Image (cartoon, rainbow, N blue to C red):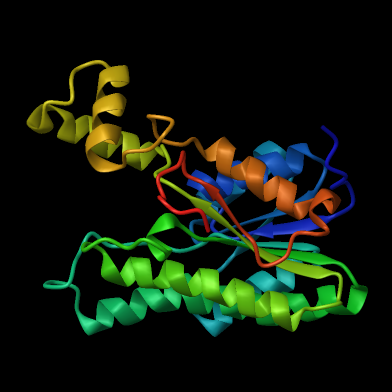
Length: 258
């Protein structure tokens, strides 16, 4: 399917690996002029060289880093706010400083890029802002409360931004992944399999880990390319009539009709 992204410039934050890399690769394959972003210059340049993209290096948790990335990105038509992180801590051991740091990395970093790049979209009369959210933003669990809170913030800021951009030709939406099989997740599951009795073959490990950790209707973890497909749709002209929506790509993990 032709998504008509040729000639559109897209910045994908946090695209030197994982979900961001998959998104950058698909947008480039669909003809977009992609800017790969990361903090690790070696990894970012490797991805960019492979897909013929520009490279922007900077820590978006700082104003200086955001300025540097925005300067390289230039006049962007599509902003995918993917950069962020999480910590394996909970209510007992997560310090207020850790709460602050993860909010800075996952929420304020997105705000920085919106403030730097969306005014240009508004002036040109067309643009896309896509937040990468997550099911924990709407159905949080006991662990990683600070991470869940930042996902909820990403969802709500996308709705507020959509209302701010009413009648401008710029849309704001969310892609909400479920548990996705990136390299780090596969390595962790393989390491945990013996102690949890998940089996020896990868097929057994995935099936049993999903049933125990993230039960869903499809019975497996998602793949990065499936998230990228949803982002590419929202970035395209086919999504002109989609505003403040959340597209869940989670195999049915979230048990909700809204």
